[in-house]
Image 1 (tube, rainbow, N blue to C red):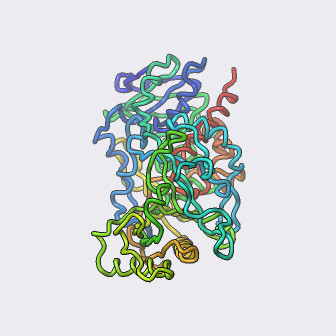
Image 2 (image 1 turned 90 degrees about the horizontal axis):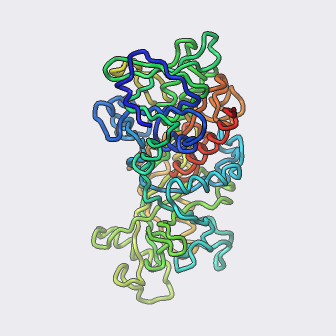
Image 3 (image 1 turned 45 degrees about the vertical axis):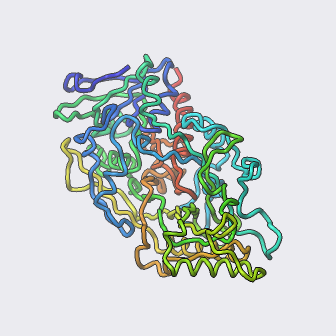
Length: 517
């Protein structure tokens, strides 16, 4: 059922079993799970079905830190404030996190999830259907039998020692635009009320400050109303979730869930870096796995990324690292790059008196720019706080201070060096770095993937996290949080959507037990 919030009377009171704040991927996924049940559901969305500049302007805030080259635009461009949320500009990359991403890693402070990867396996399969990706198997040998073979095979003969480079496969959603794909299912559900133009400005507790009592919703005309749920889910993203919790400070001066100064801290985004080029001496046609293409077996678009093998991550104490290969045409290389490419070919083909000119034939070498996605470590001082500036609704805007540890750059450089050594050791090519080992300066093309994580992190200890293993606020028993803001760590590759959907589905099952008649 569609509700135009502008037509509700000022200071109205709406009672419901479940209120979901935010109609992005997580919020819509949970609402779909509750459609057609015997419970009343209110889904609150700040925008409408189409973008509105006046509503989008509410996302503006302040950003600083030691990583962003253009901080002034980060908060605005990385979020969309209308039905469907960020799925309206999502690229479609899908991959579960790896098992190591859930483990406490001694070399990564504050790492470790409250449960292993296996706890999400069944939910990943349900999430896959939401993003319309065909069934797939991440075992490369089985998933890619028709010539799309990995560059490095496990325990490959011909070089001493185990293989330290691996391949991870990313599968692509069409991409599914949740606002378009699931609009009718939400609007047609008789027990779900979708409120558009509903801007949540405060989460209000009871007089004792213990339970969530109401959610205050403001409209751009200055009027407001309240939703009074039995249970609520905050699903507004890694910036808005902590902003709303911090701004809800009428009964608790530090904000909801912030008794131990954890709300807004540990902000993370996957690092996007272009640190150099790889010069491969293997035929370009043999690298089909690393070129976006359709998997004939599973009818799913996919691409392979070079990554550091898990054994090497543990041995060298590295963060997650993956590199996509973007082929560079021979005609676009300057003479110095061409000379380097020729040298790479000669070094790997010493048995040939006249190695072929790179790119002169399909059997020749090729050059690829490395597009690296790197995992950041959780940093306590990387955080979202409240700005002194206020939006047109009177709410404090978000202030982001994104801090990346120097050791994160060191890990990236060591991973890049490991890739270079392994390519040379296996006679596959060479790496031409464009960065220095010194992490003191910003690397070229450093930025983020707009994956806002960690700001309401999950932990069993209330002193170390905002929500528990069920995504429930430790100090507010009927308030839950959905989305990547609950991630304790970022994971090894920039594909957060599938995991946040798996967590949302897991949370939905938990809520059905919570609201059992």
